[in-house]
Length: 457
Picture: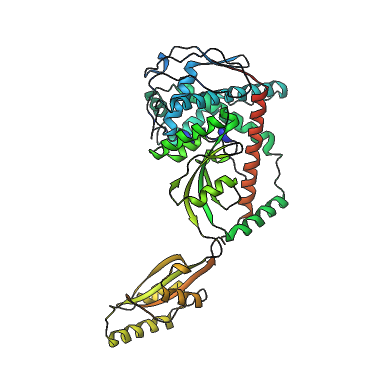
């Protein structure tokens, strides 16, 4: 069975976000704000030091120390460059309110990448193997990003430079991401087994939930432990909601700010049923209409933002797929006109074998129109159509039905309870595999942060 590959949270999303580089973002201007709140590990906070104002040119930034991670320095130049990259790829506009969030997220990302590369180099020394991606692998990944934008790598780098972002900034991010993703997948993915009992239990739960409403959801999850506490997570989520309401693309925001395993897919969580997400999220989804964005939803370990893309009824509703052949008739048509129309439709009904050839047969008769009515809930149909559809089996064609618009033949091409789509066991396995590998990766990073000495300035 094929397992999901984009399953390591932030380690998986570099290639996806880079494709958005040309669609949004402006060079960072103004003065970076002081980072507020811890970022994990044994943080030793030095006196605040604001980064200097940044002109458009990437190397005009004066450098000082923004943070030290196990004696390895992150400079204010590194921090400013990463902020520019976040702005360019998230679609969130830099304002006085959002700059601290950009700075916090940029510094957290840089700290995580330093910890990841330090761990990989330690493993390289112990195991005598190469784990950190080579320049050739980084350049290949960059070339693929450029191709996604219908550009050559040189043009892509020039586009970065035009937004004040040095190419080395993206190189460093790519190197850490693909190296860490490969390490997590290689170390844990090959040993991770999803048992048939897990698949069966999930399948039974999904089948039991088929009678409940189902929601097509995109999500952003702000991990409170990662950003320095629940208050910071709530404030950051509120700023992201405001930016998305003003036009920032949800997928780009999710890729850059979400700690969920769905971040690499732009936050796409697919179709979910009540019980698959925290109760607080379920309660919020019940109040949303398709196309609506939620306010921040605090849960036990962080804050969710959800976007309800679509909603469908549970299995208690019956869905029917219909086709029709009809003769248009005014409400005041004569008895003779109605009789002539009925003769035409009865002939079609006798000649057609079902949905497969109804339109073809009807097309041979002058004055008859035919077409596919698609799928609809039985309860939403006009009374005459609903009565006919209730009594027909799949493949059967009704007797002529009179409505104010004309005389109709109705064919039932499909009938099912809402939520009865086939549930693929491979998809269930892939989803469980991705969730578990993502959880392992998050715990690994938590342990690295807790054991590290991290000083922010």
